[in-house]
Length: 124
Image (cartoon, rainbow, N blue to C red; front, side, top):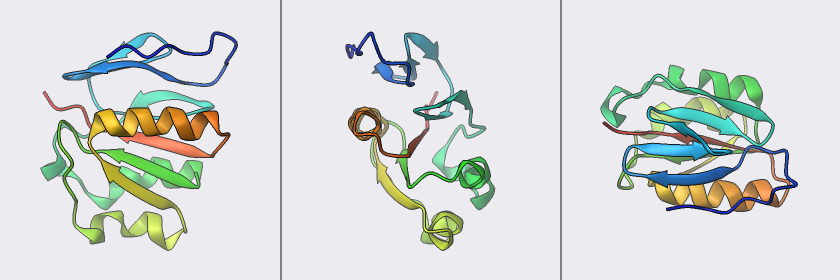
């Protein structure tokens, strides 16, 4: 799906997504990433939800958003609460949804000026 960004925006916006990829400001990513409105997309070393550990959220904790949108791939799957506990202890909200829904929700919250990060699992 192609999304149409506001050309005057300097924030990182999801401009497209599909099976196995996400575009941030028209730049294509084929592996899992984290991204925020003012933080460039960076690799997120996660290939499968089965490989998720609490350490995968360390970079997000370092940035300190108000909320993390965790896109779990093609379908919504819920990790064990012990894996997301490091975020909750620091009062960082987490919403879990499939990756396409996380992309759309990220754009809405980002446009509202919210301090949001998206952690997007892209499965091979």
